[in-house]
Image (cartoon, rainbow, N blue to C red; front, side, top):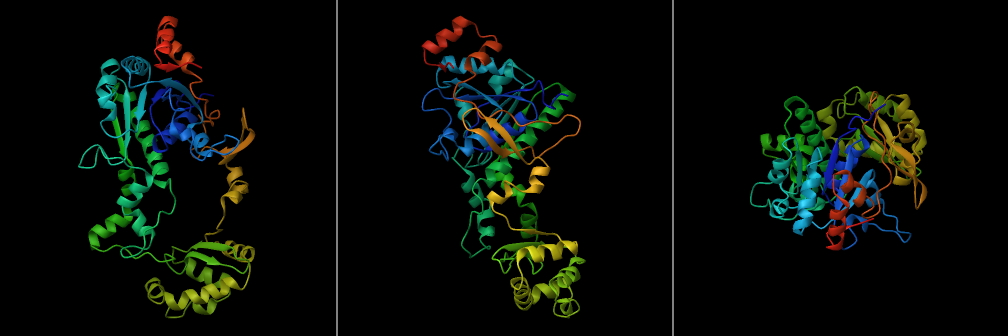
Length: 397
């Protein structure tokens, strides 16, 4: 059984998180991903983020599994030529430098397309490629701040902004990037031609918040953000100190939640019987619900709510998620053998196909491990490899 992207070769110039996790997703689906790193300075900076005393870095492993590592100095003319020759053998080229950087190095879309009209050139930026900030640097938290996400997460205008999860913009941007590349690959099957694919952190963050932004643009007012979205949409603390999340977004859940909590006398209370009334009188309703939840432990309430078919979950920590039965059953958490760290758990595939399934790739590669093999397969002679190594253009494994 073949993987869905078997035979697709990707030349990956990306760094940090937005680009690298996109190519992880493509590698998981069977693409050959060739990661280009600088020979000097220890390679891509992601190798050093979150590094533990034993040398392990979860950031690097999560963002670079399933790839091959090739070291080429792109700032040297010979390195540029080597990259272009390598790109001529690939289906996709991806990068996430500042807009204009690859063009300045002679490694932009037009240069690759001149050698391969079928090339798909994926460009992930912080701001998009147009406008006054196009060439300005950006990172995950910058886009969360600029897009309104940090302010809304903190409670809205006038409140202290919060970054709920550093990496959210990068990870969602990566998924958007992978989607764009897959769409271009599908289009190429029909037209035979490649094209440029552009995504940005800013654009992805705006897309993530589309309902909120559309509401604001129509009403002229941002929706208020409270501790809970509504009395029956939010988390409540139980007697054991754990929190239970409920989402009673459909009106049918209102009586179910009240019966599960043992306060069914509130079902027909005119202050709470309808959605608008519950919102207007939430300062009266939420204390009653908080008191009920605090009377028993989280296991008790979770069982009661699920028996009533109310969407509910315990608020978990990462350590709990890592051994969670539901995550394990679906292959969202899997085990993998690492050459240096032995048996380890990692995040599995979140997109699963029945006929041509993907599979998680091998652990992230050592720096320059695949330089010789990849360049030989692309037609580089031994003399050329030797000359490039002697000039410090490539780092041979």
